[in-house]
Image (cartoon, rainbow, N blue to C red; front, side, top):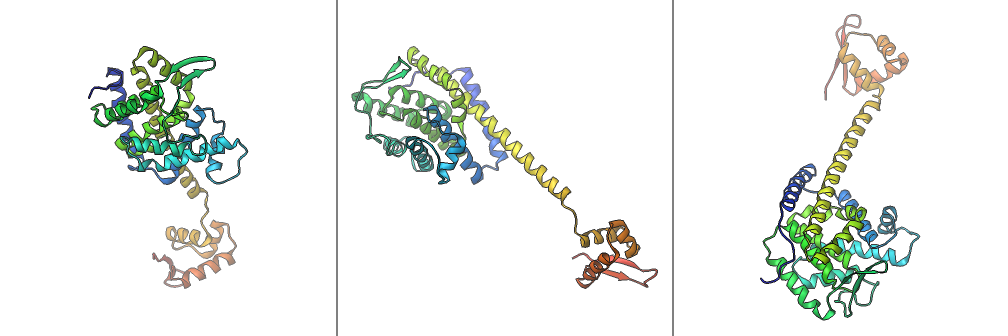
Length: 335
């Protein structure tokens, strides 16, 4: 295999790989090796909103959620279409294999459906990447794209690199080649997620893009520097750090949600008062020889209320009076 993305395996990269492995184990254990549907959908919506925001889509997380719920949203039709396409693409992701170029083209066709004329096809013209007025990257000629992409996919299929490193290296090389007329960033991030999900399925629902969105200036800066230096180790390190931070955030969010759930359950148990029959049974179980008048006094209830409740409990077989009326005692019958 002659082709090799321009990176070197460093101690820093290896530390990230080890740390991410530990965090994945913790995340899987916290979720019993699978995410509940609500959490999967929530994380996917975060992924979509963040990935589109990196490409200047202005819809908020709340608006994206509303669009996917079929609600009317005030926004640019193009941006709304981008959301629908992205959700469809991420939902279809499990049908694709990361080593198949035809699947990449199918993913691009779905992601850019109705947005550009050549969705699902390599670009046919030259492409330059600009930041404002400045040209930061001139992509390879369109005539070279089929060969370059074939080499990249062949490397991905046969590399011994760890999937974390391979996915990040693929991401860089994909952006360097810039094979499509539009949507390269979105499809590059989606394909990295696909690669990772074939290693650890739960990573299909890790919203790494949320971290990238908050660090997009560094993201683009490192892409440019890697291009200038013909070396992408720093960019790979950036992406691994983003994955590590996303996992830590997911673990903390899960822990906070579980804590809130338990506290809510305890609070509900504490705040929910016992009904009168349950109060009577509890009191008579502890003090079987007290009179109904004493029960009414201790519970702050009218004697007539207590007498009616006791009559029902006796009829239900839940309560029995044993012995003579004066010196007898109450017996609570467990069902």
